[in-house]
Amino acid sequence: MRIARYRFEQDVAYGIVDGEQIREIAGTPFPEVAGIEVTGVEHHIDEVDLLAPVLPTKIIAVAKNYADHAREMGGEVPAEPMIFLKPSTAVIGPESVIRLPEQSRQVEHEAELAVVIGRLCKDVPEHRVPEVILGYTCANDVTARDLQAVDGQWGRAKGFDTFCPLGPWIATDIDPDDLAIECEVNEQIRQDGNTADMVRSIPELVAWISSVMTLVPGDVILTGTPAGVGPLRNGDTVTVTIEGIGTLDNIVSDTGVFA
Image (cartoon, rainbow, N blue to C red):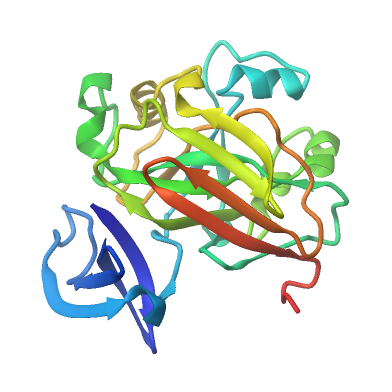
């Protein structure tokens, strides 16, 4: 099942994507909140604006979870997972604009598989992790690389508004262990990896993160990026594609409004 969040005229709703149609559901898709109930309202997908499929209270990102990316950044995979937070205000959806901040001269893309948490949870054992996951979506962990190097910590470099594109929807019935993941900029492939190359699996990551903090429905975990990260320039179109999920397109602008 693919679950999208969308706007039709002035209304925002969740819906199930079925081919070219979106079937509206009542409330949210999170089981502990409302469950999934189809209302009977349908729209053609071209009639709606797809939004970020979730509005998380927090985004927990995992650094250096692909060995090839760790090497290209001049480091090694850490002994334990290395995590950082991105603010909810960084989230944008498909076709939205990634704004290049004035403070940076080196903004880069990072294509990632995102886990969407479906249930309130803490200290989840690895074998029960599937029970707390709603599904998966595409993400771009946009990073001001020069500020990351200067600051010595990543809050500013990773936290600008628009620096966490998510979408186009949540896929609930895929196996995340062996999925092709690509990033293109202006139709040129930059990243070409596979989730099978993650150092730590999704059960390992969710169990470890939930031992640190409580996860709530809608929280997002970014699982790391493969090698090939590179610069984004004004006017670029950046595309993240993950097998079994779909494609997330965003435009890059130094003004926040693409003309």
